[in-house]
Length: 157
Image (cartoon, rainbow, N blue to C red):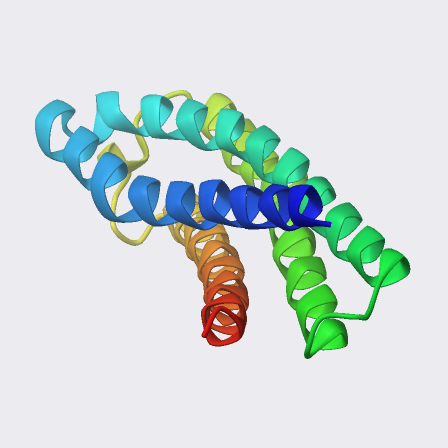
């Protein structure tokens, strides 16, 4: 049982920690050093790779929570935990398989840095909406992850 608990906590720590680090440290630093034109593909690739980590962490988290519940008494707030893990995974899957792919396709189709487009260009506005959707999905995943961290911390008392 403690091995499953370790797997669930480790998956959650890697997933939430990674999202906070990428969104709060890595992306701003890369944009500050490289500038928007060169930073965008780098941050896009980092996110693409990290989504794979998120898929694996989400699967491990959900599986370990389910096995813990099957093997012994369910953890407190089990359904909330399982729901939050599902929300995290769903947000990550949508961001990685739908939104980020549309962003990459739009960049390739436009062929020039998005920042070089005129402020009123409809393609720039569409890109901005996709970027905002991607950021919002990561925010949802982080928020759900923080609920899980809170529940784990509360139970550790």
